[in-house]
Image 1 (cartoon, helix red, strand yellow):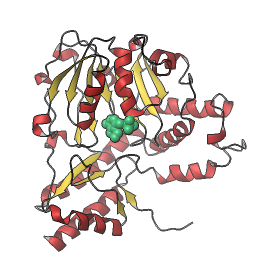
Image 2 (cartoon, helix red, strand yellow; image 1 turned 90 degrees about the vertical axis):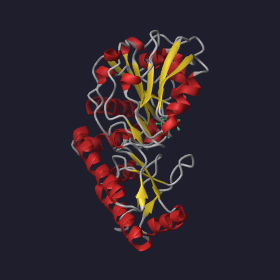
Image 3 (tube, helix red, strand yellow; image 1 turned 45 degrees about the horizontal axis):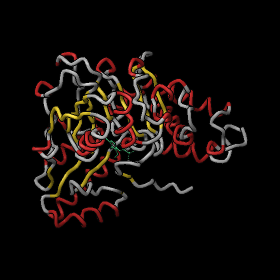
Image 4 (cartoon, helix red, strand yellow; image 1 turned 90 degrees about the horizontal axis):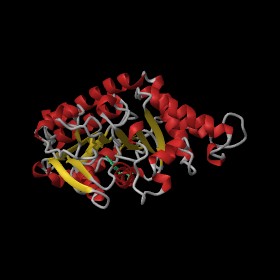
Length: 366
Ligand code: PMP
């Protein structure tokens, strides 16, 4: 095997995975722990896979300190699937309130309109998704069935650094968070959350797995149109095995959970993520060559969109990055410019390599 390091991949998702996880998966590919089968070839009801899924669930619970009154579900359908699955399970066709802070929460609010009476309680659309609206300004309705936030907007680079306390705002509805692009990058205060969902393909593993953590009292309220395979109660009662779960994606997530525990868990990961984000934002802020438009208190530690002030240099910037082994830095088409996604699996060295490119490129073209 070549000893040259792999390039640093800044893709927003599917995204870079920890190298030890990929190596373990390669080792297990043909034969998992001597059972004669690869994980992709196993029955989801067999002893081997059941042990893989149980360990993954237990490790996720431990890493995120999920309290016992919450169930962990391994589902399919992704974040966009959850945009329909959540209202079908929690809205009972009634009122639901959304806080729009970027492309994903906007999309969620639109999908929910098919199932519920949607109200946008706050929006940063007038600021082009660059701010976090202060919870005290949210116009929440008395009878809302839940309040939806996207706690990290992957495209816009806007992150909630504290969860709102809905009870303190006079709202007793549960908070639903789409934490797809920063789950496991920081702790979650479960006392403020009713349901959290996340696709695995950014900060956890590969596409195909959606993790749902839901408070038990929210189970059992699905609308009759809700497909059985997407009814949280049905999935919970079957231990996430009502239908065939995404077995390989669960296995990879399990390897990532083990890797995270070996790294020191979420507190250690969060400290590392803070250091990585600080290095990158400080470099962008210190240069007249680059700009980041997100308000400082809402800047994401995971997804860092930025612009070259002279956008005619974009292609040269990306080509130079690629030459140095820095991949997938082009921004989302709706925002433009660049975006560096620096999830858990991106080491500080990768961010330092990007910072070196930012500085060298600015020096050469400034
Ligand atoms: N929510 C967020 C925050 C996301 O970043 C994404 C994917 N980029 C989605 C939802 C949609 O996920 P999926 O494509 O898995 O449906």
